[in-house]
Image (spheres, rainbow, N blue to C red):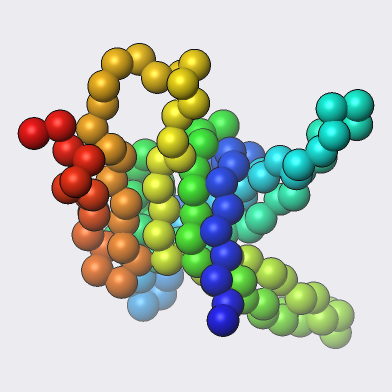
Length: 133
């Protein structure tokens, strides 16, 4: 099974492009802090992410550099060749994105849960059990 879930912050604004076939693609990068001991400096891993269609539009509209994000998808590799030199590229093919849960210090009152976008349908999903009504 190839499934990855990460929570971190965007390292740059999302880059939206429309491909020749009309499909929209949004590329962005997420920095994820590694766990570390108190006396050691923090480190981060950086993940390139590719979102498509409705999910691409959602990311492009709601996220920017520094925004917190939770990404669910699968790791994929591709190989490109330029000037006879092959380069392997790894990225998360995004299936869902969410706003991460706020810590207690960041909460400012009772808010409805943030939507999740399903990559296949492009529809927002909301957990109705958590709605305040």
